[in-house]
Image (cartoon, rainbow, N blue to C red):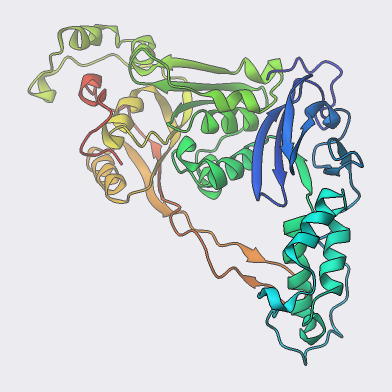
Length: 410
């Protein structure tokens, strides 16, 4: 929802804002709009979203005494960063022995009874630790792991996160990756950096990520410049994610959509090419085509993530819209289409500095005395083609890639 921004602190949650509400460190992610009458699922009940109003983004919330309201909590019980572990007992077993029902004195019925009576999660965790047969046999590390496992299960902690590009990218990728075209957060960050996106830039975006890339660019522009979400055909694809950024009216005005064909016609000296689209004809010999006068493109950078279109045709169609020395970025989950694009750009001398990067990242566990990379990781970050435009690209028949399936599509 766009806000006027007059007298509004962007770090304070107000009615009408969108909040990314994650439970127990992204175990469950919800996109909620704070307004009267709307609720958020938390635990076994529904809480009013208006309970968030007046608190700062990033505040941690737990269930209130009535079990149906949200109350801010001071810290997350599962995070004990200040605990000293240098003198921890290393003689015990490093395994968690409480996996079988026989190792716990408390029965399932007793645990469910405590939950039904309204007992807090911390109380249940303390009872489980006290009634564990093997807790004292574990090492200090295993005891902390056991406690954290029980805390994640029985203690509900929700965090009201501010919907920035980084937060939305992580939330969508973790839960709804198909909505954003499987665009990984670190890949998006690398694309924004390589495209040199910043204030006073004019950025052209051709995406299939429901507006995530467009919103991320608008966030970096900060209300200075423009971002145009181009699209093939007359029907504009959904860019609904841009409405979740809580942009002010100033930033919202920098976002607009337009068909790629109309953008090409706006460039000086290219109106004569309309007859090729109307008649669906193309000269057999490009060298005999009518030379166009010098164009005056305005876009200083371009990002293409439209995986359901032909990347080669899309890239060469937007080249006439890019100003000299403009940077472009093409993102693909498959390497070969980018290799074909890079080779053709070099042969025709349309760009310099063409490079293909592989997006790679690995999460690191940071804990006292046991900091190490996670054993499991996502290896599929995709590939990025970057370069700098040196001369305007030749005309490309847009009709040849209006279909959603092409041999170069990925």
